[in-house]
Amino acid sequence: MSELRYSPQQEIRSAVWLMLNVISLGVIQLRERLGLTPHTPLLPRHAISRLSRFLAQAEPALRRCLYLCAAELGALPVFPRETASSGPARPRETTQHIARASQPAFRLFETRAHRPDAKPPRPTFKTGPRIRFLDADDVPDIHEYDKLPSDILPAKRLVRRLMALDHAMDHRDLYIEKIRRCLGEARQLIAKTGKRLFRHGPLTRLQCETAQLIEAETHAVQPHFNSS
Image (tube, rainbow, N blue to C red):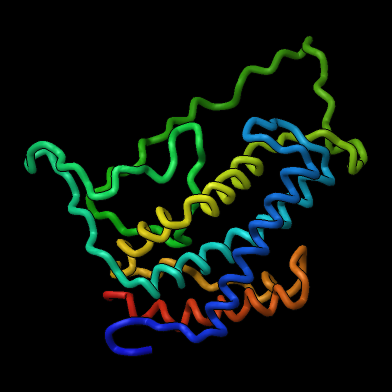
C-alpha cells in the first residue's frame, strides 16, 4: 500500500468481483426458488433455515467487499452535522437516499459510533405481573410439539434482510460513497468474524477461501484509515 492511496493487488480485485457475483446469484436463486417478495410474511421451516444460513455468510462478505471498494477509491469529507443554530439545512451533493421507508437499508457497519450528544434511553417502568384468569382456556405450548420441516413460521425479518442485501447489490455506488465518508472515523467499521464463519455452510470450499482472503485484506487495510 502506498502512503497516499490504497491500491489492491489483482488477486484482491478478482476475489471481490467473484464474491459479489456469488452473492448476487445466491439472492436471485433464493427469490426464485422460494417465491420471495418484499411482503412475504411466512415461510416453511426448511426455507427459513436455508435463508438464514445464506444471510449469515452473505451479509459480512458483502460488507467487506464494499469496504475494499471504498478504500480503493479513497476517503471523502464528512458532511457537517446540522444543528438548530447553524441555520437552514444546505442541500447535499448527493440527493439520492440509500433507502426509503418501504425499502430496508443494508447495515454497512458492524460497530456503533460513539455519540456523546446522544439522548439516554427512556426509563422503563415495571408494573408487576399481569392478572391471570383462572377460568380461561389453557394456551398450548408450541415447544411440546415436534419440529417439522414443513412448519410455517414468521419470516418477515429475514425477508427484509434479504431485500436489503439485494438493494445494496443494486445500489453499490451509494453504499460505497457512505463508507468513503466514514473511513476516517476513530473506530473500526468492520469487526473480526468468528473462526467458523467462512469455514463451511452454503458457500463452497473455494468460495469460503475467497471470503477468508477478503476478510484478511479488510483488516490489513482498516488501520490505515482509522483516525484514532
